[in-house]
Length: 234
Length: 326
Image (tube, rainbow over all chains, first blue to last red; front, side):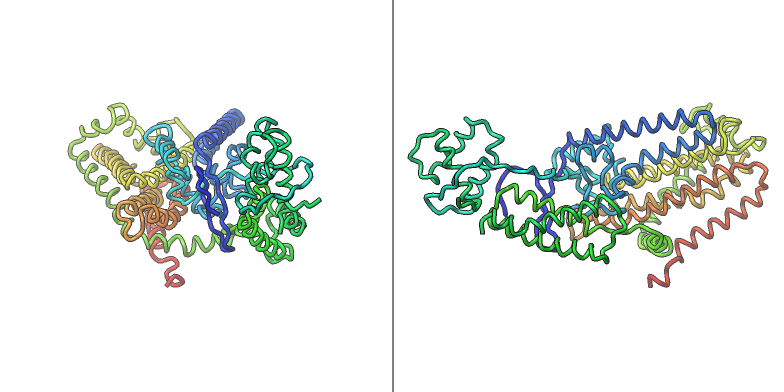
C-alpha cells in the first residue's frame, strides 16, 4: 500500500512478506529522552558520591568506574536488556531497533553508543543534531554506522466506538479507497465537533444520494453508509 | 468480506496472540521457541501476517490495520529476538571471534601501530637530545612533577607522592584510558582523521615523557613501571585506533557499495575489536595501579613479568583460534 503523503515512515520488509511500518523519532522526542537519562545519571553519580565519601579511596575508585560506565555503557545495558530502551526513552515511548525492525544486536548497540563521541562534535552534539534534522529517518551518525533506528513505539490501539446509526446502502459502487475514507470519517466522528463533521460529510454526500442539504441529516446518511460498508445490514 | 465479518472471524486469534505476547515480552525471558507456546506464537504470527496483508489490500478501516500492525510488529520483535548472550557465546568470542577479527584487520593494525610508535620514537629522541623541548608540550611545573612521580625514592611510582591510593588510580585509569580508546574508535567516523590524530597525539605525549625522564636519568624507575601494563594498554589503543581507521577507510574508499553500506558493514566487523580492547584496558588498569607502581618489586621481576605479558598478548592475538578458523 503506497500512499503519497508527507511522512517519515520507514518500511521494513519481514521474511513473511509484510511491510512493518517504523516511525523514526525526531529531534525533540530524542532530546527529552536524552535529558531524562542525563538527569538520572547525574542523580546516580551524586548519590554514589555522597554514599562512598566515608569509605575513602576505594569509594572514590567506585565512583570513577561508575562515571565511566554511565558515560559509555549505560545505554548499551538498557538497549540490550529486553526493552531496547533507556529509562528516558521508555518514558517517551521510544525504542532502538535495527533498520529491518529487529531487536538491536549487541554489536550495533555498542557501536552506536561509542560513536556518540563523534556525534558530540564539534560541540554539544552538533553533528548529531544536524544529522537528525536533515535525514528523513532521523538518524544520528552512530545510528548510520550501526544501522539502527530510534522509533516511536506504536501506541496501544484505542477502542473505536461508532455512533449507532441505521445502515444505509450507498447509491453507487465505491472503490476500496473511497470505502476506507467513508469508514475513517465514521470512526473519527466522536472526536470531531458537530460542525466539522457536517463539513466533512458534505464531501462524501454523493455516496449517500444527497438530496438533503448540508447538515446533520446528511451527516447521519453518510454515517449510515459507513455502517453499511462496515458490514451491518440491519 | 466486510470489515465486521473479518473482525468477527479472526478476533479470537488476535486476542490469543495479544495474550501470548504479553506473557512473552512482559514476563520470563526463558520461554524458548521449543515449547508448545512458542510454536503457537509462531503459527499465530504467520496467520496475522496473512490477515494484515489481506486487510491492507482490501483497505479495511484504519483502526483495524493499526491493531494488526501493532500485533505483527510486537510478534516480529518477540520471534526474531537474538540470543547472542551467555557463556557459550562469550567462549566463542574469546577463543575465536576476537583473535580472528584482529588478524582480519592486520593491515589497519600495522598502520595504527606505526601512527602510535613512530611519534613516540621521534618525539622521544627529540626531547632526549633537546630536553628544553619538553616545555613545548607541558609547562615547567608539570615537567617537574614528572620527575617527582618517577623519582627512585617515591612511595609509589607513577603518581604524585601521597596524592592517591592504588584504588583511586585504578578507577582513574579505567575512566581515562578506556575513554581514550573509545575516542580513537569514534574519531574514525570523521574520515579517519580523529583516529589518526588521537594515535599521533598519544604517541607524542608518551614519547615526550619517556625522552624527558630518560634524559634526567630516571629511566631506571620509568621503564620497569611502564613495561608490564603497556603490553595491554598500547595494544588496546592500537586495536581501537585500527577499528577507527577502518571506519574512516570504509567511508573514503567504499568500493562497489555506497558509502553508507560500506560504513555499516565495516562497523559491524570492527566493533568486535572494541570488546577485546576494553577488556585489555581493564587488565592494564589493574596492573598499572597495583603492580607497576609498587616500588618494592625489583626491576628484574618487573621486566620478567612484562616480557611474559607481551609474549602472551601477541601470542594470543596471532595464534589463538587459527586451527578452527582455518
